[in-house]
Length: 322
Image 1: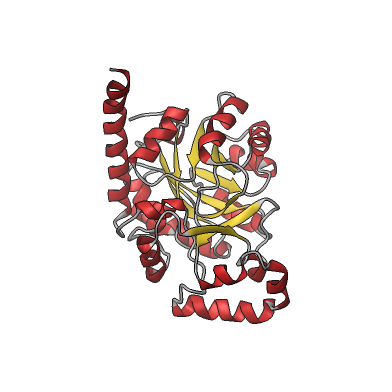
Image 2: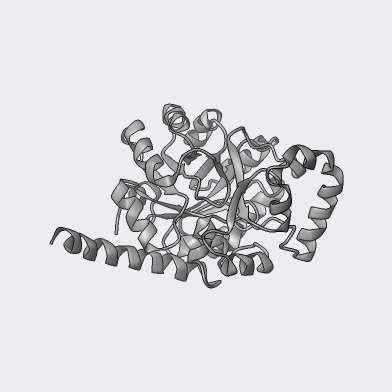
């Protein structure tokens, strides 16, 4: 299996791990890159020196290409981006903001720029900015995602809108069936979050991983009830895809009331995260939670997805076309 994304990024398999804040640290990025995909560090989880150490730790674990991804709506990004450029990572990915200001400096340093988008309009903007690839993220994705378009219609619409720029599908992909489906849509690869968040190398909590393994496809909700408490600076049109629990069932749809108790709930949610209380703390996951039944090494996950997709793409056309 080989696509234009493999040529662009210098990778063997057209799979990128989402640069999830929290789970995607050096261990996960290195494991994905070593298995032939593109590993991305979630670069918005710490300060510049922390990021520099994460990049160095990844480099100690793999000689293959890897990169750093940012939640680009967050303040104080310039110092973090500067570290990624100074360290000469292969790729910098931007999400939740116009990537235009970040492209020239990265390209001047020989670094590729990926942009994650949730709408066709954002994809057109990213293409005009000169990014090298675009990840089209549907509402099925875990964690922070858009609220309007699902992956199935968004990916081909973005492909039609951005010309020759390679498009990566994000949201709702956890196995070879998902990868095969988005390749048929015309995507050049898959950007995978939840499945890699539930891997051995993920830096996410073990109690959170166990909660995802136990969850089903219908057990998630798109909500703002955690961001309202934390004050996370995500733009309009972005919600948080999490597993339903007692907290979401109580407050989703009652956001105005929740804001009145913001201070008290901030302390309660921080304590819940420290104690592993999944009935209050956020466990971010997409609908693919229902397809995940074990915590496994990231390399094994990637290789199985590729093998399954190859088998489907060889077998299914003959079954359908006769």
